[in-house]
Length: 528
Image (cartoon, rainbow, N blue to C red; front, side, top):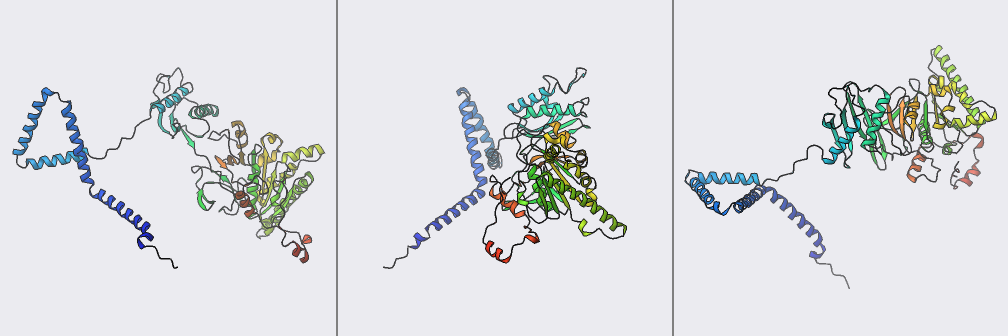
């Protein structure tokens, strides 16, 4: 038996009801717009009537008679005046329109009671530092007015200070680092811990601007950055710190973020880099990120002093000259790097004297990455052999002219083991992980204008290129793809950046071996 079709009203009922509701909603909105003046006047008449009833109820009974006589007299005068009723109606409509208008509550001006208490607490805490007994009219005094000292202030949703401008007396020693550090530490403690503050000292105008910094993005994975040859992205910083942005992929979307770009090569003023941090702070991830970017245009030689196999993913890749974890291999590789630097210098000098361009084999950048060289130095001292860092003197001193770049990463407890050439020639510095102000000053050469928090994510720190300013830094996530704790997204991002594997000529498999291994998956190296 054939099925009979549903009635049209049942099959299209839902769509008709939806269209009807949309039409009704549109008609209601249009009617509201057209009748808005009438609605306003009606609301005003209702409010005037309610006010009249309240006035009549509040009037004593012995005064209601004279009030009625006064109202009747006014009505009679208006009725006898030419055009009086018309003018009275117009006045009534105007009063009703004014009374019936939509009133919005005025925005509160000034801080509330809790904010005033917080500002007063900050003011009282600064009194011992910004006042002296000899001042006849002190700007900071116990029980004084905070509004003269704090000219501008903002609060966040939690009621804590997010921005504050402090006027301080001219006799305050704002040129001394210790004096400024005491003020910064006090404001950091009183304004709320767990946030990072930026302090901008205007010594000429005697003003201090305190700003709460937003956290840097930690979800940017390793990828191909839009940079020129000789430019390396160390990480990302604040928007107000640099005048450049880079497009980065965030999943399926794309956004622009401000980078910290380190320029290397012949015209670089900071040709070598020193990275210092605590264990687990992300120094190896930064070196891995630098290696992936360097392999796009040059060759890489990796010396791993810790011997944990963090660079196993680069083994056998195009452009990776060697990955040495032992002392003998490190010494041999660094000795070759020193001879290669000298060869490049001699070849370029001879070509320059002959009036020819530099040879092509001297133009390709050579990167020497040393992770934990202090560990190899301890092994060399125990074995009675020379420190591998002694072989870095030639690449460090003449690397810029030979297109050779040296990157050294070590920990804070091994800073004393770094050789003098490493300290002198690595003018680009990066500090990752938690560090004290003294440690930051020792590595960067100057303290940052921010207060670091106690708990920071991996890859978070500061960077300073030469004599430039200190930037906050967040290294792009570049974990070891062979680590079980690595997420699939970050693992795949690193694997996509790895060059093709290169096989030596004497180790190429035969056609029969290729047929046997064609369906075999590529083995994954073990950790460490």
